[in-house]
Image (cartoon, rainbow, N blue to C red; front, side, top):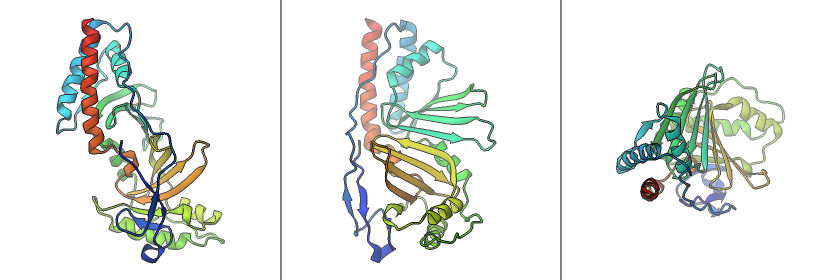
Amino acid sequence: MKEFPIPVRTSPDVLGPGSQTAEGEGFSYAPFPRDVPTFSMPQVPEGADAASLGTAHRLLARFVDQMDGGAPRVELSALPASVVRVLNESLGEGEVCVRIATRNGDGAEIRIQETVFAGVWREQHLRADGGREHDWLLACPVPPVAIERAQRAATTHLPPFEILRGAMNSPALLTEIREQVLHFRPGQPPHVINLTLLPLTAEDQAVLEQAAPAGPVAILSRGFGNCRITSTTLRNLWRVQYFNSMQTLILNTLEVVEVPEVAMAAADDLADSRERMRELLEWMGESGSA
């Protein structure tokens, strides 16, 4: 798992208090206090019949082969329940989960759960009645639907908002945010605004909530403590919040980026997952032949 240093001091003479790009000099880092996550190979379910185990094994073998230089995606919804059970228990649950609300507000949603293999995801599209429309197994840094739905629901223009009496720094912050959102291009370093370092009044916070309310995508990453990531209605603007074990907010940032790095699996993670899934396949093969 990649290290993720958190900036704790910025360079106000370059970018203004609390703001920074992710590259360059001017800020120092401190490691985020957390337990280091360790990998534990999931268990092949006891009592699984040989046919279900064999079907799951063949599916995963093709999937792992396609991971070598590709981004495979396999639909699982038509599989027998016994095979899905083998896959569920063999893949386990990892550090990152995603919830995406639909635009019509009827209760339908997309739920995404990383498996214990970093960068390997289960993406389920649920109807309002709870039925499952799709159940994808895919390998990628972050499921594309999370970026696509965040972008679809966002705009580059600030919505109408009121500057409240008592607001001090929010007007200047909104000017900075507007410029960054308008000029953002995919692939450029993230622009980070560290709200923790700024003297924000309750009125400032309210203005920011009005101008950049939450969007449809919510991500929880447990790999670095407890990190909650929320899209906003401004394109490529994300609210990224870090909490300690007591659920106290210890770092509150806004990031202008296609998707925050903490939500993504690195190339090394995916390569490592591919090798570990090959080990799982060997184990499954031994279980099926026992």
